[in-house]
Length: 482
Image (cartoon, rainbow, N blue to C red; front, side, top):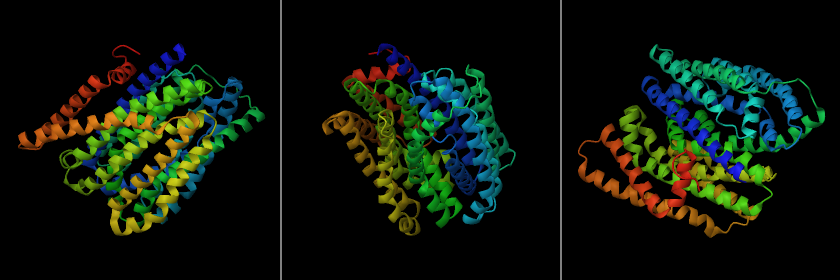
């Protein structure tokens, strides 16, 4: 287990570096573009990417995850997968190109058709990098992928901001995304030592698709659940309302998407290797759950507290209507990050069906409420519905994990208790000092507040939860590993 732990920690470190770097670049880029473009531009882009994300779910039909899960005949599996994925990618591109005019008619916006057509081309590019990318992840060789993930993001940032300054409007984001996909494809093949032999195995293809169908089923339900709100807003309200909601949603979900991506990419292959040792599996899962809680709870609560000042100072007055939705959705980000730990358990133990049931429950709760809340309460009402349904789904998912790993409810509560208490203490004390001493609220005073809260919080974690503090530091190569 020592070698696996070392590889896992190393993987977390390198994936963490990649995610942190790319998210910071995307975040800064979004802020600059928010200054240069309008909420309506962001609304159109949000719909365009929504359609492409629907198609991209079927990009490899879950074959990538099947490659990670499979324990034998790896070369034959990779060769078979490499023949399947481009065929799927080209088919999805053709479908996206054909339905683009219908999408424009449905959302009553002619600008959508050319946007969807060009973005659909990137699905073909993505399908060509599936096999080498997942082979690297299977062996926890994440260090090699860092450059292939950071450099394309730099390319996107440079292209999108430059074109926005030149007046290309929403097309600055579209062209930037195309450049990102081209650079990503070139770099992943450059760093990968695997090369296809173009051998197809019918039996393996059936095995891959059989495993993948449950993954796709889960992804489809997750996608519907996580984007159904945008569909209702885009159809019922104006594009500017969707732009406001999309901005609030993306900011609130920064902790969730970053943490979930980090956990899913590293822990799924790691959990797949230890699934037979239930005791070690349980200890490892609870440790991961606690470390995530330590990071995501203060981030989400902090987002709730600084939402108003952040939007007014950083984004500007035209984004003010996103303040309250951002505060509500900060809890969505918290619940989503914690939920992200459960899917790996279901997939690594060969029970992806449970993931489908979790998301189905969330859909059953939110779907009957979405139309009326969107029509009468706008983006605030739909934010409440999404947070409530996700919270119920989280409880159900944790219960299922408890059944698999024999975890008691109080063990979850022990993981959440101190991060919540430390967060509330730190935010309350620093906010009190902030209100009493700060005369003018600007980017400098806001930055000082954030830094002081972080220092206060992690000081408490260091004093009372030193073990987990060192665990988190060890991921980044700082301090002693435990």
